[in-house]
Image 1 (cartoon, one colour):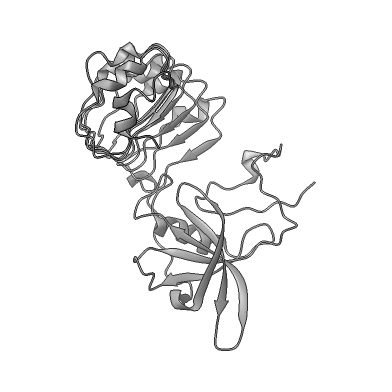
Image 2 (tube, one colour):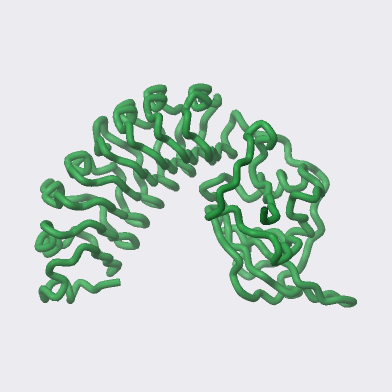
Length: 316
């Protein structure tokens, strides 16, 4: 993390990366001193609501993050940035995206947790688009023009207002991750059989085992009146995540039941100090390996489309 003082003093001249989080309310004009070298700009966690009209002067800018700011309109000027491939406006207040606001060479687009109701048809022109996160908005339908995004690999549209599943998604040849829980069309009845409640005070958290869009999983010790057991605890990050609502993930875990190739769910957290929801899970033995980083083929028709299931795979 750099400081605004370093920027103004010229200390950062020639930098390729700039990250500022210092209660900014306006885009610092001093950043333009880096317009010939800057490739990554992260101005997340500020109070910005707009970008200057000459923002496209950053000819080499590839990545731009503006998460946790006050934008209400997606900046149209971004479409004029010739090298921009990754854009993030997570947790702003965006309610409008102008037509043709996306760069043609855009590959990653992160708009999670905004107030968006409609995606412009011009998104279909972004043929290189690979990863898109629209979760936590008010989107009622995706433009069919998105079917032209043949390179799309990941799409998160959970926790929106979609009334129908976009059937054209099934025609995308590279789509391998799709999260759509928490929409009217996917609403299911919650299972009445509750998981056992486990008091937070009975758990001692240790090192973090991993984390994803929905929560953080830590190793922990569970102390009961009779025994002490090593377990894993998943604490959800919030009421809405990139993959939907915590209630739906817990519902999926209950529905799945016990299976040799599923992580066993022991119970549900009770009385978390920040009132967060969570699950207590069996600890996977160290002989099992994470799928990430390994070439593993799982046929889609062999796995039911249930959100929230945790799979474990032994090494080959």
